[in-house]
Image 1 (spheres, rainbow, N blue to C red):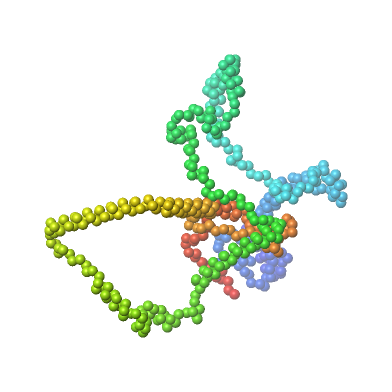
Image 2: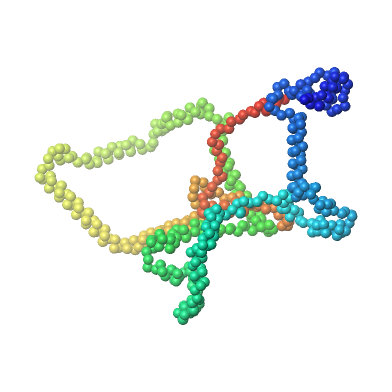
Length: 485
């Protein structure tokens, strides 16, 4: 059976007249493969044609599903199922009359909500999906089987142990209070209050006399906190009060002193930068070394100029003569009595022993003589001791002052050195006239972070640098390569 559209097209071509249908064509034009329904020559046979009836049906079905989803999202259901009162309202031009007439219908029954409430409201009328995890119960299947088992056992008269004990407890008669129980309750009520953190805590009396290591290992007593953790690493306050010039409405003198302080800090920083630039500066063409200066520098110290031979100093020959006379008159070194390697005689040994005894006797007599003379030097020795003690006290005080001064300074805890943050200030032209026009300076988070570093609580840090593991590979896509200008 032939398709009716194809039959109509063939009849129009056979008659030679141009038809009135949307698919009509001029019979004089050559017939194309695409118009004849065969499709493009290079087109795959498995592809669906966009102009076919299946594609049209798919488009209509997609549009219908989109309309249904929009109605469900905006109105909560299909428009055909909604009543007219929920879709329309009476508009008389007067807002009060409109509210009165539409109040029963539910439109404008309430006042208009705020903008923030409208933003937070859910625009979709589709209810949120049910949270399955919120309704799930752990071991639900196991508990369900357990309940079913106990229901079967309850029909036979078997009761669980918990239920049996509870029933026995209820069936027992209430025990009357005895005198001892009343006395104990009275003692508890009359017991004085105590501090649970004190050493005389009655709760810790049961642990008294037991081994500390055993109590710590059994978790009955906390481990003693080391004394080093009780020391404050820095005496600086946690929150430092800024200078009066940093206020939003400072006085002229306070603001100028703050500006002067910031100016001095900036000058120091500028001097450091200039020094570094001067050290790393490459010499200019005038300062560059020439071959002559290089040769002069290499010959420096190799040639010595003799100026002593030009002018003879007065009295030179006489001094030389005196030196010769003194050399002649000086005693000659003693000649060794026995040559090296020869055996000494008994007489020589006796003389050496006698010389050693005489020298030791002279040294001992000299020491006794000096000790006796020190009695007359007590005043000077006392002054020397006082001076030495005063010097030791001065050094001790200097070390203590230096230790106190360094206690408030940030220590070197890591590889980086602590650097003071930039001072937060405003110029005279930037001062605000009121709090409404005040421009905030600085950051609270950075200020707290720097305070922790300054008080030696954490080490100075810097932001981690991103280091790429592999080299970037640039690829030119085919679509970009096809673009030609």
